[in-house]
Length: 114
Image 1 (cartoon, rainbow, N blue to C red):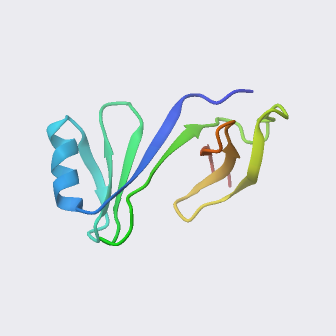
Image 2: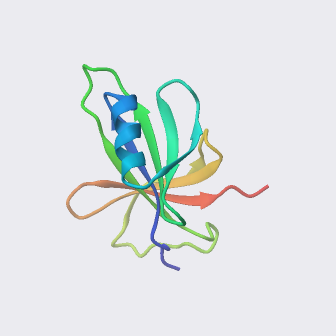
Image 3: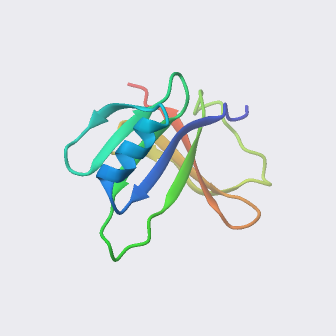
């Protein structure tokens, strides 16, 4: 079984307010905010943009999460290096990380089942 495209983009920023306005001007709607410099944006049925403010002394990062519809049925070929197997996240999903041939880490997300 393969992944099903991009589920979410996790974006770190040094300025939540400016970044929120930037994405809203590009047509993204703020679906959820915790009030502490983080929030979730979405444009239609596209991928989620999760934006989190980080301190000035830290370089902002970016992570793309690919969707997996069936965690139990997902068996990557040995060419895909599994860094961490599926495990629960604090935001209600199951996540696996893999490394691509150039050393980048990718997140694979599946729905958490009861």
